Every structure is written in structure tokens, then in C-alpha cells.
Amino acid sequence: MNASKLDCQPHGNAKLIVREPRPADPLLSIVVPVFNEESMSVIFLREIRSVLHDAELRFQIIFVDDGSTDQTLIKLIEVSESNASIQVISFSRNFGKEAALTAGIDYAQGDVVIPMDVDLQDPPELIPQFISKWREGFDVVYGLRVSRSSDTLMKRQTAGLFYRFFNRVSEVQLPENAGDFRLIDRRVVEVLRKLPERNRFMKGLFAWAGFTSIGVPYERQERQADTTKWNYWKLWNFALDGVVGFSTTPLRVWAYLGAFVAALAFGYGSFIVLRVLMLGTDVPGYASLMTAILFLGGIQLLSMGILGEYLGRLFIAVKGRPVYIIETIFKNGRRVHEGSLNE
Image (cartoon, rainbow, N blue to C red; front, side):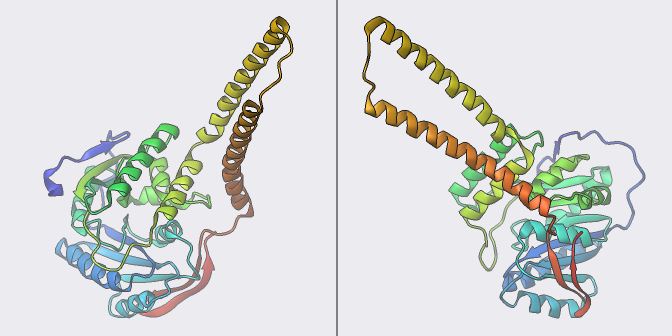
């Protein structure tokens, strides 16, 4: 499906406010997290440079190597030797994709920033359309996946369930089927850079920041090389980070559930008292007693687990450790910066 033939969809407050004109020749910062993507990095770079050169756009590409154990970093350094527009940030270890996105946004210098995955499932050909919408006055232009045929049925269904559940329990609303692939204006970038939280859920942070936004529909493509580093366990934990980071509803649910169980217990207790007064002493059954104990025990353990999720994130936040640690930054194949962490 050709994205240019589809209607763009505004999200949230899409009313445009007259501001200063957009720069005539903006600098684009493309932020690309990579982890063990030695083959895909070369393919991505060839495709993205072709699109940007054809569109006559000024750009810089910031690769953030998230502790790769293969030849990814070496290949990226080699490529940067002959291209001043490429910058490579190397982490001291694997901190995760959200940390890599954070670092890339922190170091981006462009008038607009475009986070992208290296797998080319999000087509670079959409970037000129992003720029066009940005010139119209939108501060955030996100890619909207109208087709995910490249994903498995289970992944499509679980993703849909996550977006619906998240939007039900959170005040921050995520546009369904929108990933990290988007254009964000410099104003939005400066807001994101000031957010101090340690558990990063970038989709939620993009939406939380607000500003005028619009979606550009597209079909998601197949990955061209290497394999995805995400499995269902990682996706589950990622979804959990999102819900816990942007909603207190899971905590509130247990207060209501506790009140409901207490009301049932009071009603059942009243029934037992009345029956004994009217019919005499009754010997309680073992099965019903064990069922009640196991049910209440399970509820208590589950509620403690929910509390633990929030408490664990508070524990991490209180320690104040950095989101990432940079080992080296490379420009033109040379080290220009070593050993730093984000504040």
C-alpha cells in the first residue's frame, strides 16, 4: 500500500498555532540504536543516504551501539571515516534500546530528530512526507502502521491488546500501531532531554510531551538481514514498563478488589451467624475452608507483586544511576569523546 495515497491522521490536539516559519534548510538528526546488526547496518546506511540525498536534505546520522558483541561497532567506525555526517556513540555495555534512543536524542543537533530502527521495516522513503507535515506546523509526525503482515499473527494480536489496554488505564494516549519511527521538532527534543526518569518508555514519553502531532500511514516491510533481538519475554517486560510507568490504575484496582472481597466475607460471615442461630452448630467443610484460604492467599501475593513492580521502580529512581554510560564517541573514524554518562 502506497503511503502517499493514504490520508494522514491527526492525533490529540491537532489544531495548528501560527509560529515562526520553519527553517528553509533544516538539519535532520537520524537516531539509530543498533545491537549486533553488522549486516543490517551497512544495508540501512546505503538506503537512508540514498533517500536523503535524493530529497536534498541536510542530515547527520547518529548510530548508538548498545554494547554489540559482533563486528557492528567496527563496521560503523570504518564507514564514519569517509563520511562526516555519521557519528557513532558506543556504550560501555548493553543498556537497552530505550537508553540508546535517549542517548541519540541527547546528542542530536538537528532542527528535527527522527528515531529509526536499523532493520528498515520502517521505510526511509517516508521521511520527505514527515518533513512536509512538519513544515505545515506539526511538531511530531509519527509513522502509523496500517499493515503489519511482516509480523506474526500472535505479535499483531498482542500488540493490539497492549495499545488498547494502555489507553484504557493511562491518561497518556498512545496512537495505536505507532512505533518509535517519527519526526520530532527541536522544541519537543528539548523537553525530552529534561525528563529525569530512569525507566524509559519512549513511546509514552513522546506522547506525554504533547505538542501538535499527526500520523502518516505506511505498510511495515520485512526485515532484510540479521534477526530481531526481541522475544516475547522482552516484549512482555517492555509492556509492563510502559503500563507501570504511565498509570497507577493497577494499584487502584487492588483497593477496589480488597473492598469487594471484604464485602463478600462480611456477607458470608453474616449468613453463617444467622444459620447457626436458626439451625444450630454447623461443622465447617474442609474443602470450602481451603478454597477460601488459597483464593485470599493468591490475591494477596498478586497484589504484593503489583506493589513490588512500583516499589522496584522507585528503588531504581532513588539510586539515581545514569540511564546509559558512553565509552567512546567516534567522528570521521576518530575518537572525539571518551568515558561519560548522562546526568
